[in-house]
Amino acid sequence: MSKPKTNNTSLSATTSIPQIHHPTRLPQYTSLKHLPAAVKLPSVVKSFNLKVEVGTDGTVPAFLHLPKNYQNQQSTAAILLSGAGGGVAGPSGIYISMADKLASLQNGLPVLRMDYRIPARNKYCVADVLAAMDYLSAQYGVGRFVLVGWSFGGAPVFAVGGQDSRVVGCATIASQTAETEGIRAVGRRGVPVLLLHGTGDRTLSPQCSERLYDMYGSKGQRKVHYFEGDDHALTRNSVEAEKMLCEFIAGVAGSKINDTEKEVVSKSLVDDGDKVEMMKKGGDLRGAESIE
Image 1 (cartoon, rainbow, N blue to C red):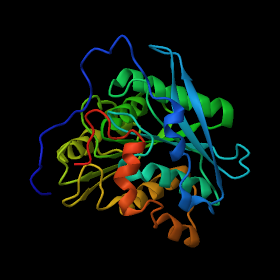
Image 2: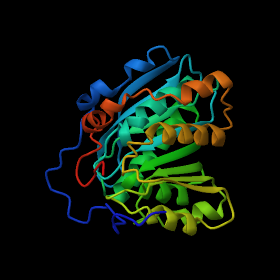
Image 3: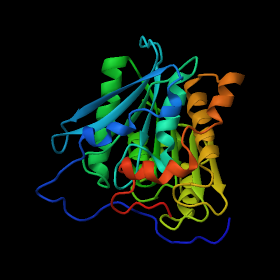
């Protein structure tokens, strides 16, 4: 691995929350419900406001991608979490593409893209994720979850994964190490973990993923992959990263990807020229978050 471009290991906010807090509203994301390139894929998307009553009452904008004619037959779902600014598109917009693909598989998976009530404050974000898990359990009979987090999103992924046995897989893209001690408990339980990072990341050091790999321990299945010279949003390797994440999630869920579906999974539904714009529209570049 080349020399890190930064020593930064955290994007968690430490300032007080303003008394007048204006969370993001669902209508701000209406253009990001579904990708035009996914029109032919057999899946549906439900947009809604997720109610969270822990810490401070509020709602979280969310998009649930479901297999077409879904009848609660899948016991595993994926939840995709963005960074310190919140958002619903993910790094290079891959979350929308991933969700459409995974929901369209023959053994399709429910996939939830969600914002946060108060981004970068992990205790509130953890409550948001737990509320999402409870919602999917109650409404769709889901009892197993794979959590994916970008940047700051690694904090709620490992905080929840470390305390809730319903989490059966964790993956991160360019994660921080602050507030991620839960990965030790994840490792003790042998929960599979996938860590992705660009060595040219100027926002969070790739040594964060190296540290997380070590913190996990040697009991379970852990993998770290570095994209040489790539940035914080993996803009140069987003298609490969998306493919690795889809295969990881499907593998943990026991949902086999057939040969035809492998071709679909290997192709991005987001054009190169749309990656950054999609992140801006999705709120993923608010606050301390950056492409670089």
